Image (cartoon, rainbow, N blue to C red; front, side):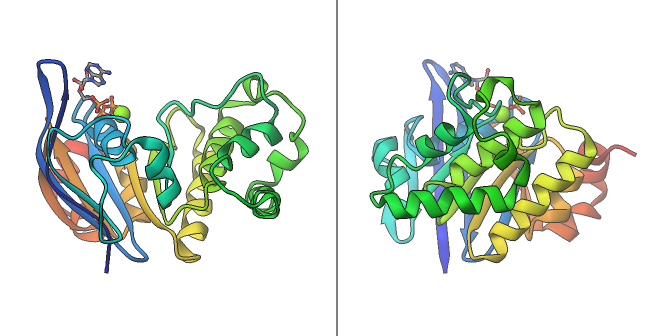
Length: 236
Ligand SMILES: Nc1ncnc2c1ncn2[C@@H]1O[C@H](COP(=O)(O)OP(=O)(O)OP(=O)(O)O)[C@@H](O)[C@H]1O
Ligand SMILES: [Mg+2]
């Protein structure tokens, strides 16, 4: 079953059209990645799915329900949670408080508490840092917190925007391992990444986006071995 089905999505800012009619699906149990150059429209795509940027045309269906006209605070309650590009954690709140904020739409205090425990299992360093202000964490710790905060909303679909950005390879491996674990628990993942090689190694399927259009889509291993993808996105 499709968890998410985006069809002919158009979006932009003012007079500029950024997304020129993209279509993609995320199926139950999948990690799907969108790779593409700077400015291709990857973040805009996630922002549309979250209800932060409005779709101008096309449809977004989540678990059979039309969501392109819903405001963000309703989308999150349906089970779509985003870890945004640049992490955007609350710098003055502690790690614990950042996690609590991630659970603001979750009604049960017991569920928030168990969510925090789960976050600490996934990223033990966050437990050690639980009373430290978010803004004083290292970049890697902040990224872990951003993913954990998104998980606090009990997502059925997790949107991850550039979780590897600016991080040392060892930390990237840790974060990708955590994503794999979450996916193994049944959470569908839509992952936007500059690090195309790692993203395609982690994902089941991938889409290549160029200037607001999807130009290729296939199983991740097929894209990894595609000469055009290699030349444009995988370097040597
Ligand atoms: N709030 C905004 N107002 C005006 N233009 C915007 C806004 N956000 C993004 N854009 C423009 O939309 C285009 C797509 O941006 P977007 O952030 O979606 O790209 P991206 O694929 O995520 O790029 P990157 O890999 O650099 O994060 C860019 O040309 C950008 O300048
Ligand atoms: Mg982006």
